[in-house]
Length: 207
Image 1 (cartoon, one colour):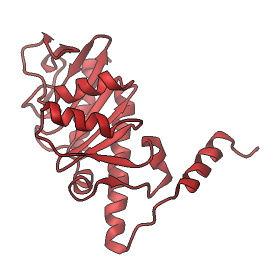
Image 2 (image 1 turned 90 degrees about the horizontal axis):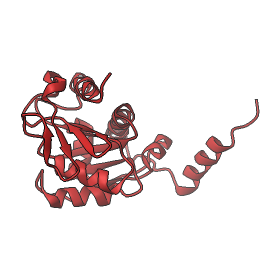
Image 3 (image 1 turned 180 degrees about the vertical axis):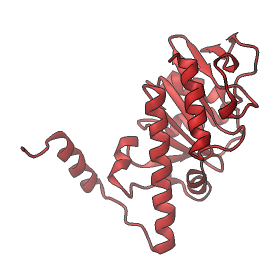
Image 4 (image 1 turned 45 degrees about the vertical axis):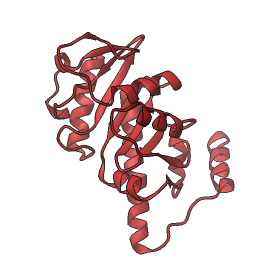
């Protein structure tokens, strides 16, 4: 499956799993000095490989007739500052709830370590602007995921599959936290507890 075919496949999955609605959300994958990105104004479950433009690292379209996603500047800023090879941005329900009410998502489950621990909420800025790109880049420092104030979430990975699974995990963690608030005050794991999880993973007990 080509990288642009992967964009179509994971775009379809994002719609099917309720992570985006309509034309919201966007995905990209890096191909050396080029980036394949979903186009602006087309629902992610209606993409074809030919509709996904290729841009260079300055944002110049080098292949394709459709306008790249309005969030392309954010994607390019993330590629510039991280080791990401793929990016998924969604407007998922629970992620957006947390992004409109919190400054960070605390580690209420040890799987938060897979995203880098505490997930930061990037400061609000208008979509598609250099300000938003800078805010998200700062929130992602040392992380695999960030939330965007009053907007949604973004995750990165070495592959589209990895970035997409990070998005699913981010949404699950946000849902656990939000649903936990309806019952009481969710317990947050301490640095010591998280360190113990890392130690356990690195040094599992003998069989």
